[in-house]
Structure formats: structure tokens, C-alpha cells
Image (tube, rainbow over all chains, first blue to last red; front, side, top):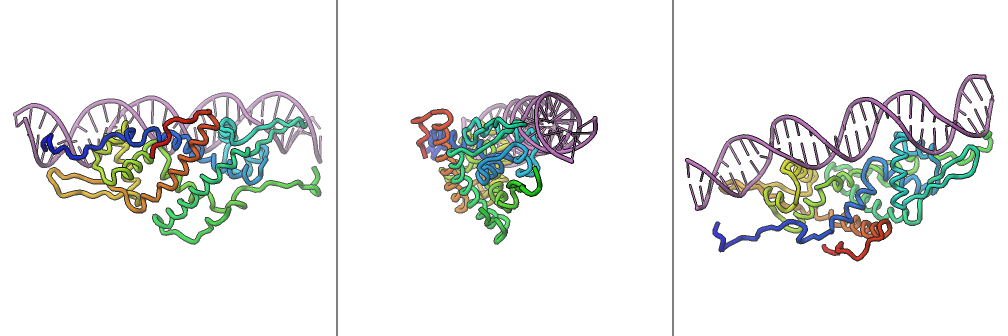
Amino acid sequence: MKNKEVKDIKIPMKEHFGNYMVPVRDALEVFSGKWKIPIISALTFYETCGFKELERIVEGITPKMLSKELKFLEENLLIIRKVEDTRPITVTYSITEYGKTCKSVMSELYRWGVEHRKKVFNIEGQTWDKC
Amino acid sequence: MKNKEVKDIKIPMKEHFGNYMVPVRDALEVFSGKWKIPIISALTFYETCGFKELERIVEGITPKMLSKELKFLEENLLIIRKVEDTRPITVTYSITEYGKTCKSVMSELYRWGVEHRKKVFNIEGQTWDKC
DNA sequence: CATATCACTATACTTTTGGATACCACTATA
DNA sequence: TATAGTGGTATCCAAAAGTATAGTGATATG
């Protein structure tokens, strides 16, 4: 191939997409992993829970993971932690107003995921219809 | 606390959410990881690319990861692989019509991610405005 | 006084994910 | 014949993510 007829050389993504990926990654960081969506969902449903309550609601999670994920979600302003002055002291975790904005993303993931199951596994009509 | 005044005991998620999490997980599997979104984006932009082209477009990816992710995306019907009868033989990867449906999820992730950056890092007005 | 509950933390381990490097067969070009 | 480009594999390694199990100190209950 001669240099004259240089056919469309495809350039690296950054030329086209700029920093498009950065906020997408940020969003994915909040939703990915095994436990973040279950925890957000639980707190969206119940508004407020204690630590042990969450341990029971989110089945299978270990206290280590729960503790770690709650810290992450608090740092990301999706939930608030409050130490209540009771005996014994209790700690409550609540979804924030901002935390509720996750719903739009989660329902888009849900919607696409349902179609994907149909397409890829030909699985339909199951009880993916709650919430 | 007496059994009489059992105060709202919070039950495990499955009672409320059923299998809600399953398609959400399916969707996340397609979009999470370091390389899937960049590859999908590249193929959405260029429609068709060769292996080495993708290696150059998706900066930093190793052939091992590229090969692995392409297989995954093909199994998930998002892209098609075609061996062209040229000399030397070339292989093309193209986005499928179905693959283009990822756009809605990705733009929702993007939209939410931009707001999240504003909220959490107070970073605004950057060039997250391409694509 | 024994046991249980609350909200965790500590330690060690396994699994998953991704990276670095080298290399393969084939073909075309200089 | 040497070099470069095609589309990948094969190995080994490091880091991240997640699991299993035990234990802490304070308080409350039977």
C-alpha cells in the first residue's frame, strides 16, 4: 500500500471521546461489585437500617464486606451514618435524597438486563418483574 | 422486648425484590471491567475494526485482554467476528444492531456519573461533553 | 452469672482480574 | 533474505476483590 492512498487510519479513542469514559467509570464504581446494589436497594426500600439488620437483609454478606461497602457509600454521599445515643448504642444507616437518584441508573440496568436475558439466554417471563 | 410488641422486623431482600437483582447483575457484567466499554465505544464509532486496529485505538490494552473481551462481547451478541478471505487473512470485528442498544445504558451511566462528579468532587465544566 | 445482642475489627485465605513479556504462523514488501 | 504487519497464544506475576472464622467491649436479658 502506497502512502498516497493512505486509507482511513483509525486514531486512538481519546481523539474522539475525550474524557467521556471518566464519569462512566465513576458511575460504574458505585454500582459494580457484589454488594453495592443490594445495599442501596435495601436502604431505598427501608429508608433506615441498623448494621445487624443489613447483615440479615442482605443475605450472605459478611460484616467485613458490609462495613467496607457502607464506608464507600457514605463517602459517596449516598447514605448517612448516625450513631444514636441509646443503650447499647446503635448505629443507623439511611439513604440520602441524593442516594435516591441511583434509581434511574438501576432501572436502566434492570431494563437492559431483562432484554439481554431474552436475547442471549432466551429466558423470558420470569419473575424479574418486582420493584 | 416482648414478643407481643414485635416491632417491624426487616426481612431478607428476596421477599421484596424477588429476582430483581439478576438482570441488573447481567447488565453490569457486560459493562464492568476496564475494557468492555472502551471496546464497545470504539466499535460503535468505527462500526468495523481489525484486531491490531483495536489494539491501537483502545490505548493500553494488551492483546490478551483484547482477545478475551472480544470473545465475551461476541458471546453476548454485541459484536460479530468475521474472517475475511484476503491475503494475509484479516479478521474484522463489528458492532451488531443489538450491540447498539448499549448506548442507552452507557449514556445513563455517563449522565449520572457527571452529576456524581459535581456532587462528590465538586468538579464541573470539564470536557466530559464529547459524544 | 451465663448468654445474647450491638457494631464492628483482625487475620488469613482464595478467587478474580488485569498486566508484562515473549512468542507463534503466515504473508507482503524492501 | 530481512523486516514488518496480520491475529492472536502461552506463561508468569501482582493487585484487587471477596470469603471464612474468630474475637472485641459494652450492655441487656433470663
